[in-house]
Length: 221
Length: 237
Image (tube, rainbow over the protein chains, first blue to last red):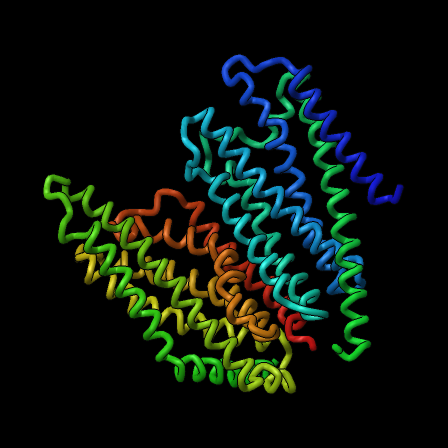
């Protein structure tokens, strides 16, 4: 079994364990019933998405300062994960909104800023997909750093504009003990998924780069 | 310092002349704005607004609509201006030529200033169109000054993102086609803040949520700083 396959197995098991704990062992919330279970994954994906955005910017900054194929590969892979997780956060948020507020969407600060962040990373992926070689690595690193400016805006949006729909920061520290455990387990599971995705995509990027340099050495024939 | 300022002035003049020469492209933006303003005005606007609506409520609704249409058109004008600048860089190798005797940050600062001036001029024309077509006749001198302040801050922010993204697009094959996809999302927070700040001003009311002013100013500043720091790296071959 390769390291990559081992990583995929570990992350699959972790997600399975988190789903089991959340759906079979954690008590039902009195008002929202089963729909409340979305919370564990919604919040976990949101935190991991923030981490992915920061990793994209840091790896991009490292690439610009010192170069290195791995830094660029990690930045690109992390941006893809950020986009994927942002999509999941938006979707799970919409399901939550439907069951909780009886509306699929509301233009409240967290949702609106989150949508803007999603669009920014969509722009990143479009830019990255359409450039080649060193230009692609350099420009996407710059874009990744600029895109990260949106992270604190999304994170602090509730504090800055206020919202009746999202709880303020730090609410998770005041939750019931079992809910905290459930959240921790699902967060750990999502983190393993993120780590596996980064490893897998970085390996693909490195392989693509090798192919590109082979192509160049062959004179583009 | 004196040398840097001289370089800045030369580059600013060059970029502004380039923008001015391609003012035909800005006419496209104005035409788009006219279409947007006309459509919105016809559907929601003063011609068919329900007469039973009280004057104050009607004014507020019109101001909201005017602000959103105005900033949609301004965003489009920004894309056109940056597109032209990126196209000129690719066609004539403009940026490579000026790089020979100027630092990346000076080139960037000059470009942001030129773009901002051009965007301010376009916004002025857009503002007149919007006021005329939405029948907004109640603005005081103070309101106009506040609108100019919001417009100028937004123009600097849009210029800061635009100059960076324009140079990035110019260094990619077919990058101009991707310009709006890369640039507009990064400009979204600015456009949102500007339209939220401008809506109450169009209704001649104070801005209730000061956070939007803070977001507008800080995002413009942060993006300018990011651009100043990273522009040199975008220009590298």
